[in-house]
Length: 195
Image 1 (cartoon, rainbow, N blue to C red):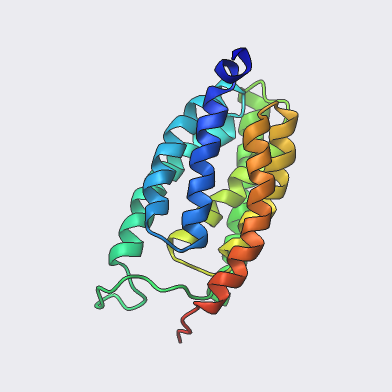
Image 2 (image 1 turned 135 degrees about the vertical axis):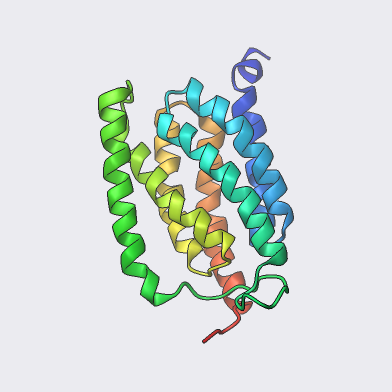
């Protein structure tokens, strides 16, 4: 019982995270509601564990959750078409700009963590945060390739969370890697080709 009391936030956010990834795999709009609850609790969990970049990232996730829900329900490829957003490919013209953004954000967050916090994992924490900024944006736009971003994030986060003694979330991220691979293939079958 003491173990459960000590890890209750980890357990609850893990259960919500499992529901979240299942809804994402199914391309279900319910993912956004579950994500909002998970991220709200994640703010507390990550702050307590000294994962300050992850904690700050949850505020961004909350905003992107509202945006993603709206985009999935009301967005479309064509601005004057109010139909639900379809799964599509990440535009090639955005790859280099977004890689540049990832590098700049990674470095900026790393500097903040090193200079203004007691983080003992600034490289990994800032990396997963920077990559996640693009990942959640790509997910909100229903880009197929968002799954590749999450695979990279999930692998690093799994190791990071085991190191930071968040075992349930760490195990969840290991499972995320597997689900993300299957999610990619499922979404690939649902891609809508756009010009």
